[in-house]
Length: 265
Image 1 (cartoon, helix red, strand yellow):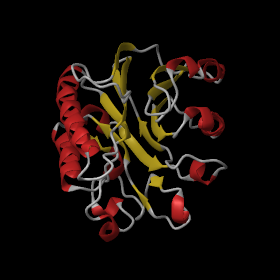
Image 2: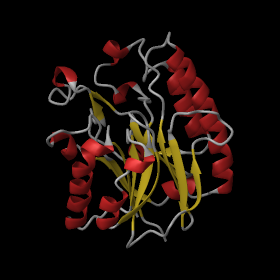
Image 3: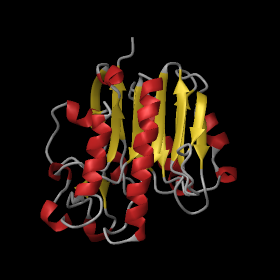
Image 4: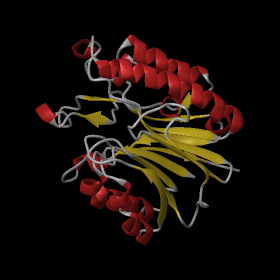
């Protein structure tokens, strides 16, 4: 099973790139079985269900106008219709559409768009920390219920300095603060594994680059998109890579896909 995460920064704009990437993976003999998307930026009635179904994928999604929104695309040929679908964090009142989860066979997939946090002295940062607490408590219960669980998404957290192109330049900003990194480590403490760091990786591998200041050309990025796996799935993880190719295309998202390959028995 190949699972991927991609913040597309508007599915309306980026649908051609999503279809192109899925088609290229299929043509290469490495089809994507489940793709978790973030920042759909469209309401549910504008979701391109027909186009994705024509490409061979069924979807679960939750969106809103202009901001946020998450989805899980699953390949018809390989994935059953999901059960136990959950939208947003149960018990946490929030108008922002940031979480969707479904169970495919015995594998629980969660697509999440973590808050950005804006700045350490902002209300949005307070909201981010509050949201993270709620997310961690819900995941604790989810992991007890689903031994085979994968959390995929844009975490808006660079876990370590090696995940930042210039740590000194980012000091004191959101995405890299001690509070956010502590929350990431709490997720790891639940028993989740950062699949990317299970393998030897080239240095300076990032998943997001600012559109401004030629960020991608200078590789001035951050690794903030992650695939975290429960212990049962981590044992079956063969590879995890960042695919930078879509960031080179016309009208790209500022993020690029992260892909993990699981050898499920």
